[in-house]
Length: 119
Image (cartoon, rainbow, N blue to C red):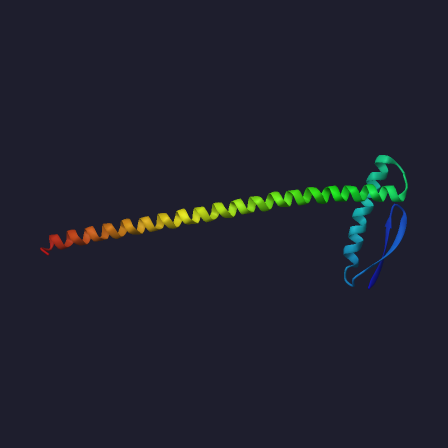
């Protein structure tokens, strides 16, 4: 296990993480620190626990909003897949209709040609 030191609200914390995840953990700690700093500017120094709790609630709110957006986007994707399949079916039906029309026209032309040739 790797160990990193993060600083949030002026306090340092030693944290363990998997090897190779140090940079990721430091980035997450920076984000949390940003939320804590934002809360501190808004409500003042009300204690680390309360600031961290408020920051956690902000993160949970953003996560909830992201999940709602993801569900909406997944629904949009499903709708678009259905529309694409319907369009592909209409296209294939049109192709089949054109093929039948061309086949019928070719048969009429052949019949006319045979008739003109005395056949």
